[in-house]
Length: 444
Image (cartoon, rainbow, N blue to C red):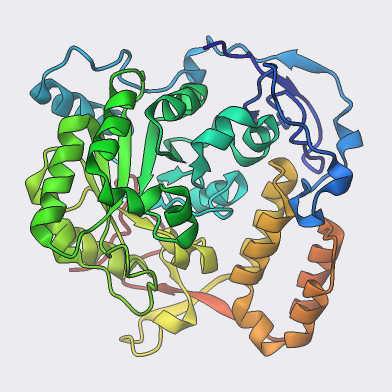
């Protein structure tokens, strides 16, 4: 496998990158990494034929700037990986190395879950500012990632500050998965395999949670990476209806070389997170059954849930997805009004609201460009409550076939001028900050 040494360009933070360029772009403050290759067969789409929301949030002409080579030999650029593949190690040695690696990363407890089109670099960086200690990329399709240069450049970006980082792939072919994984291993701390996606597209593509019907293939995917990568392999799974099947599944993954297991406490058929509560008892059973770090996924809506989940499951960290989309400051102790009603009355206005968070997100998008469809989705999630109060503003947004930053900033100003503010709240018992151990302190 030949790796192309990427390049970087210097520009103002208001500019952004075109994903078709074969480079690692950088703002003056940080280097944004994208992967590319020059092998034959690379696909180049005509931008004029693309849907406008799939276009990057920039004018490609702004990228006609001088670049310089980024030296990947720098120690800051190297992953905190195992250092060599694990083909010669015993089970005990693998477990020891799994914990050593987790410790080197600081044992992060507050983690941004993988979300298709939603856990992209600007959103990850926003969540990190507000307490997240690690994050997953969106799920990447391993076959398309290996074949399509445009897909690689647009769907996977990172920067020096974006660590610890899990890069997640869906796959059903071990060789293809390995090729994709080798492209990203210099830029991440884990290569993660998605065994949890329950959507129909995963059924049609034969990946995600539908590989639970083919455990020999699951095992071969994990083994292929564990025996050939220099960074550890993690897996994200859902539970079986039968607890013993789940425990056998988890142990099989550990034996195959998985170094960290994230367990979503719902079955493949339990797609609606509001209808079905995650089974924390099942996560606890997995934690007790394996020897590697375990992360809990499901029912994390605010910091009280974080504390309760860690206490009840014994997990080494938690993942949050849907709740972070509405409130990216969740891990810093902020909560929406929905989770203040019925509380003990200790919550106060945190002097932060979702328009503030959206402005921060947009500025990050100018610095780390992404497709407009991702930005549009985040605008709707962060401002959902505001749009319900002012539906005409939402209708104006939806009428825009092509978004611009100017339009979005003006829209936020207009919402503020309407005189309605929906604050995020802080619990006085929790304090205002997340200390180094990753948990907001509170009185017992």
